[in-house]
Length: 301
Ligand SMILES: C[S@@+](CC[C@H](N)C(=O)[O-])C[C@H]1O[C@@H](n2cnc3c(N)ncnc32)[C@H](O)[C@@H]1O
Image 1 (cartoon, rainbow, N blue to C red):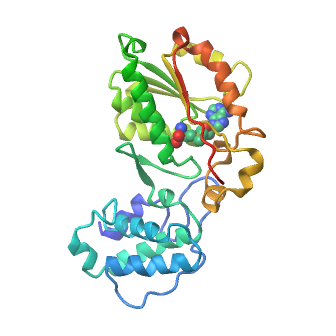
Image 2 (tube, protein in one colour):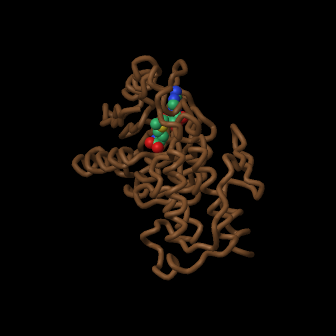
Image 3 (cartoon, helix red, strand yellow):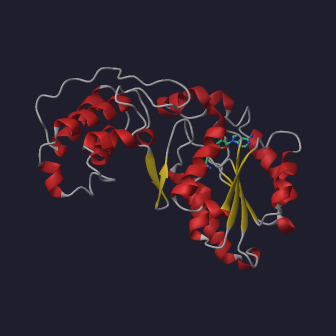
């Protein structure tokens, strides 16, 4: 199978440039991309696309083009590309593929969705719109939890900790904790089917499916905690909940507004809607009122 075909199989788009079978909009090749002057090498192509992105006001112009070019050449980062791959001319197929991916960036699609995967705490996770893309701050939450757990070995029962994650998204937090706490088990809850199915898929990819239960549940629904009782009490509740003030949603970057699920971000008028429900639910499910970690960070829109 040729490189172009292999890439098409792994990309979220069909050969026509229209998104394959995902929810929401279909993404066409618009705006049209300027033609390339000649066959370029990877370094020249990064400069070429960085210039176009800058001219069109695309944020993180250089990083975006580096990630896309590296991805098409089979590397995670441009810096990790072998020097020879940076200087030899790309094939017409590679150029076409880069052109197609860059056209999605011109439509402000986040790089993580364009590449279809992203590293989190050393794990390679599948990313798909509209499921929330884990942020660097989410990694800090995982680190805090691990540090806290190491200081409280008594919290970890004989069979390792049972953890409840509310709002699992792509599964980034749950799967990192499962990897780093080998005896642990996780109950991962989300109200969105797309999130539940992405968490399950990522669990399968990482062969962690035997220690995670994914549950479609809206924690704001009445008596939602009763649906979780059959799984037994937990040692830890962790969540990176939606916390953006509803009135700030319109000011979020185009990448977020156009592609990420507003349900993952909108915390209501005071930013506290889901947080309040988690704080109500947690004591009913925690063993002996164990620790709970909420990741709440107000960042500029
Ligand atoms: C900020 S995202 C965090 C996703 C993931 N934990 C991460 O950090 O990358 C919040 C998640 O909460 C979910 N969510 C929002 N409201 C919810 C509710 N009422 N019940 C359950 N999950 C909810 C969203 O679908 C979204 O996946």
